Figure (spheres, rainbow, N blue to C red):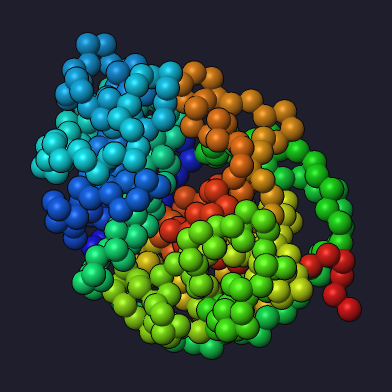
Length: 425
């Protein structure tokens, strides 16, 4: 599996965009390369999609929103692919039901790869013919950032799929994360202020990161690093999953209905976990991952803390370089925090739940046209996560980047950073 960096640069009209297009598209193929045709077709749950569908959908995106709009007389690869590989763009047309994507045995994986080739060749010709078109460059950059999101989903969906296989197969021969003790957790005081959050306007951003606006922060403190496996294990052994006083009502209902007693991929022995490299010993120093918002909130309450708001997280992280354990490092698994002063592991390793609902910023306006369905219509009943994970492509996230999932979902690399009100004594 390739681990080269294929970060998407901000949109520009320069010739470099064609090279970035090739790298991102090749990266998706490389991520799917370890999979058999059978692996690529199966859907393990309604929230996940088959790898073959990801390969096709990201091609459909370029075909529908760029080639079909920008190239006179463009020939679609197959007239029915729009129905099969549209995700949720109702203004574009009807689509195959999401929970049934695993039933799409035809087209074959080879057919889908041919589809990608057809789209790639058409895009290459378009980019060569209109290298100076800034509007086109922005659309292509949007498509590449969209594809990078699906690269992460491809990995996490495969992990869930393989965890359902009694053989517990490895996705690939993944290197083990370096062993290191977790640094002592410290509380970092943050003064209250009127701060600005949201995208500043330079470079690419999704519409849900805008507009930049003022928000009020009270005095608070952030934990210096995410919660570790070892710390979460204490919560499990202390009966955290059996104490209704720790849980939101919907969370308590969820863990009772689903029978949750530990994070998603932990084994019953509480000493090992399933990873993209197969079953491995649980590293007590690494950040706990694959926990839902409900679990993150319950742990925070048990620890005498809370989750940070997205504004608290963004203001603190904006001062840090965007460096960390991203997918390009090749580990595809969280590792222990480095021994460093200040806020550690804000970037990469695990997405960090915040206590902020995914809602529009003051003055938000979705993008015009069908692409306005990309983010805005999901601003209901979901929670914001920040920072990226070990499955996120390097260069994809920034301080203003807003990820969002429903509170019960935990198949992504989602973890916990604690916060407290007031200033630590």
